[in-house]
Length: 362
Image (cartoon, rainbow, N blue to C red):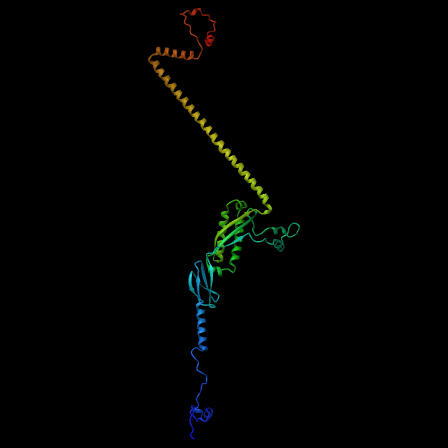
């Protein structure tokens, strides 16, 4: 019986392993693993990796609003600043973005915090009163109490409104920007108050204190490179301390009375002076009018005398008679008189008869 060859090239009766052992050169490598299909596990893993990579790359897109600025950090270090719109940065952890609101107004208030524990501060600083005890009276004062230029104490409450003008400087210029603004504002305010008088701060021009504080605080923050813009400074309160408020009110009332008396005196002066000036002007005008009338009268008398003199020169007898008649008329016209014509039985009248009295009775 002849031997038949099997599928491996040997005798059908022989096993393939025997043929391989007999003829190693003719051996074949046979892969018994089934052929993987296209939708096997390796294909799914590849697509998963690709999807994760796509999501990771897409995470770099970010949106900046019109009121914001984006600060790009590359491995935690500043890289760039972007404005409003859609932007892209290398995905985390290579680059990250910090969004900063640059239009939002923030505010802090100076003089509104809790009271200092100044008794402990005084003890640590060695401040003692006349009896040798710590100056515990200082514990009644807070950060709102400030010393003025005329060595008075005023209770001040100031609100500072600010916003961010540079996101980069705001994030990297200072470690704690909010706290820095508060400390700098308090320092500047104490400096401004220390250069002003108490009366000017309380009842005077508060606007000057606000403007000076704003300008000086902005200068200090710019020197720090804070990236902060001071919008406004507003004095909410400027009063004397509670311990002396009664005495201060008495002083204010006294000053109010002084101003009232001063105004009354000025009103009286304004009433009297115009009247006196009017009377003086009237007297001067009357004197001027009298002067002019006297001068005019004298000039008229002079002209009259000159005219009489000229008439006397041309007709002496007539002029003498005229002057006599005028003189007699002037003299006799001022006296009571009765003229008796002797030619008409005037001789029979007794000389002692009171004719002037009888004339008055009639």
